Image (cartoon, rainbow, N blue to C red; front, side, top):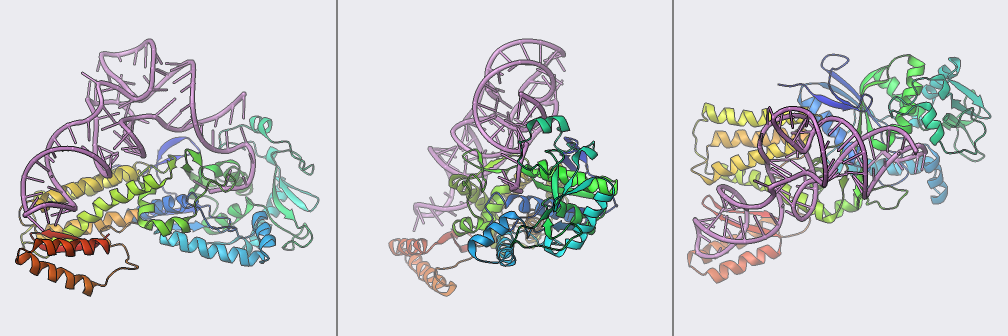
Length: 470
RNA sequence: GGAGGUAUAGCCAAGUGGUAAGGCAAAGGUCUGCAAAACCUUUAUUCCCCGGUUCAAAUCCGGGUGCCUCCUCCA
């Protein structure tokens, strides 16, 4: 069997994953700046890297997963001023909504969720170190990183300093030695939230937090650093500059970046205003569908977001759910026959294929294809003679096993918020069964239609009547 | 201007040198009291265009074209 391969932005190549420490994976994924509800595009990294994490765990790795919360920054301050809330209140509110949205989408909580405001001493210490080494300078009440002091600047985004300088926007900020320099510590304006520092009252710049916090929890070098594609430059580039200048070691071994979610082929973004909030999508579609939709394309490719595509995803997922439900239903009348060696091998081959696909840079699209192949296999033997209990159970647990890697539980009935109770349904089904016995098909169909209108789908099968909520 | 990505059936989407996966949608058939679900069959002689390399290319190379992203806060 092959090993896990990861596309590394740093080398622009797919590389075999070799952990820094055998059996362990340390990963850091940039989390949200909490000043608003998250949109569906913001939900992609949490889901993508959740699957990465789950897959490593599935393959027996001990994973440490860190995702930060940026809980102080210009946009949060702006939001606070607009809304009359304090910075803390804004942050608290949107951390809570982020956690709620992302949890609904099946994302496991990170092992550590560091917040900027709880790591000010570490950040100050980090900046002091950079100043001492000549990589940063104080200007006014601010501290800036001296990009010219890091010859490798640009290695992640594969641009050299001259090119970047040529493209850099002309800034009004004359405190900087160089337009590419970026702020590490921002002096506070009157009335703004601040912390005391050797350079006066102020707050951390955006990039420094990830360097300081990842260093605290994961060390000089860790295995994987992930985030959205747009963070490659300048955010991750700057993190590399800060961290590597201070420690003298590579910050992370593998840099992973997910593609965007687009609307009409254009990046969904807060600034463009073409975004759809996760909390709104959740009212319309099951979070399972949203997650399945995201995983049906490779994580590095952009995906368009539309009702039509989500509906397609819902239908696709429905095929797997139906299969699993039907399999459970068949268990009732399953035969107690022993599974043959060949049957065991066929089942095991599916698992191996799934692993192979996931090994290939977490190709969830191909992994899902394997699930559909399992569905066909299972449907075929369900259509044939009596289902073997042991084999059916083995496939059910395979669905659960692979579903757990993707973070989707298959065969689940969608939660019924409204609709009739089980008792009501069963009473109607009983009445219909009687009608059918008396060949009163008109009445039988009437009841079936009635149930249909209540969102209940009836199916007559050789194993008896089964029903599910639509 | 610089750096990348992408272009595969009605729609979505894998495939990165060996002769086009899978899903959705559609059509026909089987099963069924009728349905549902399922199964079987059909749906790209061809992978944006033009050249080249090769016994062999959707896959490699060169040149175009379209769309997207980054170079500025953005997942």
